[in-house]
Image (cartoon, rainbow, N blue to C red):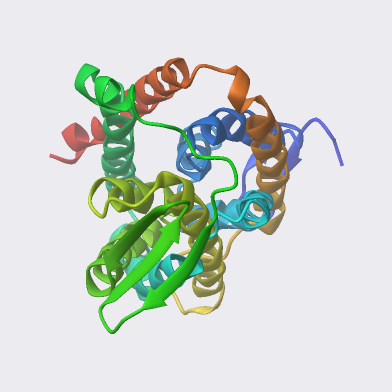
Length: 303
């Protein structure tokens, strides 16, 4: 075996063994500093650089989540910022959504052009969300907002038939169970198609619409992404697919991505306090926006 050039049997990808973990490390290093999972940028790399466009690329992307996410979840649990009730509501909604996403991806988005358009739409949303946070009126509103108080933990969660209430620090928060489950179901469909689990999509809705503190949302969304990624990998691995359609993940390729991603998340968490968030979000948002525009040009070829 040539260490500098290797052909992955499952996916047919030919590349150097060091490239997947290096790319995943660099992506996760940057995205982890702004609280975004790197899986959404890893997929464009696989599509455009590795030329991996079969439905199994979504499953391989989910394998990345299985390896890269646990270290982040562990950190939130240790710091007392894991809101388990929110996590399980998100899981309950996203799991059936991932099943629908699998069906859509395998039976209706086999065409690489259509899938690239879908990827472009997801990336467009994520880029606009990042860039919107840099708007002058949003920044002015945050100047007087305090950071997380030392010793703040999520606790005293009470579950009513249609609402969950909890405390974080000295403040009390609540959210509607049906509304959160419906949102999670919709996000699960997108995550199942794309291969990202959905945490990067649902977290901003939890903050902006439900008014929940980002300090507790991040851990719950990340843990839910990990659990739904397990379900997604199982669906892509075990469910029947149309003849000739590859759905099973490339475990070796996904594992190499995951190793690099786990290291990148760890280093990113360490460096986060030393890097200006505004500059990072601007750079990341601009890169994602360019990628979105690139993939959305596929619409011209489909017309």
